[in-house]
Image (cartoon, rainbow over all chains, first blue to last red; front, top):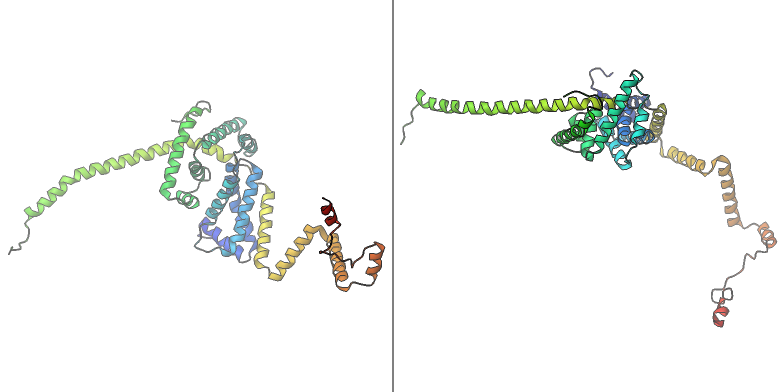
Amino acid sequence: MFNGSTEKEIDCVLILAFANGDRKAAQQLTERLMPKIHAHAYYRLGNIADAEDVTQEAFLRLWQFAPRWEQGNAHVSTWLYRVVSNLCKDRYRRPKLEDLIVAKEPTDETQSPADKIDDHYRQKALYDAMSLLPENQRLAVQFRHIDELTNPEIAEIMGLSVEAVESLTARGKRKLIEVLASYKTELGYTHG
Amino acid sequence: MVKKTNPSSDDISVFFDAAKGTMPKDHQDLKNNILRDAEKTNSELNTLDELSVFFEASKVGVPKVNRDLETRILRDADRAHGVMNASPVRLWIDQSLVFLKELGGFPSAVGFTASLAAGVCIGFYSPDWSDSITSFFLIDAFDEVSFTGSFLGLNEIFEDI
């Protein structure tokens, strides 16, 4: 059915199918997009319960909007990212980093304990450094390097030009490098 | 009148020479631009390399999504789906059922409906047995309140003051 289609075209087909009465399409869409949206919300809010609430709300809005969805609309994932980003902004509170670290601990069973500790320190370091960035820069860096979106997608979500996004990301990364420089030795990071 | 002649190769060579004269400068600019872009790209790549360790660490630790969340999302989808396809009558019935549920369930709904019906009957028909009830509770249903006379004797009280 989806041969030759890009991931985003598949999402579009699924949302239109849902709007036309295909309930299974909702399940497929949820399985495809929920982990990404939840991860974004979690990193923004630093709390699993809040992230889940925001994710559920974003999807509810998607289901309600589905009958008005048109082929030329934004990509489903982009649309969802924009909604969840706004919901996070409304609900934003400074996350407790401890929650973030503890919650992440049991996720990757293949890592050795030493690797896990290193990763936890790196997460903490990056998290602290990101919190020093202005909101737009932090958001652009998160979308680009943690959510792994493209610059045009980020531009669409944030309502900016691609150049503005590039500039925000570059400035954000420069700032992060400065802040993280002090962590390098401590974390056993020797590159550069 | 100026006689138009075909330009000789010497005439044209002036332009070629002029063009050649600018070439090295353009090339130099182009080269500088390319080098600057390469340096910038290289610098950006280095920056990315330096940060990628931290970004990767953040990505690997994202918690697994609770299965319950998926169930909740799909339940919402079902509801939204129902709303999309439901007729107005069906929607009204659904909303009424939700209202009754919020009221306290079936027993409360029955009690509420019965008392509502009784109230309406008594109000419209004023049955004969209502007299005996009112007399039992010593209620004079036809007491008239005079708005012109003294109300609860307040006039007298105010006169004393």
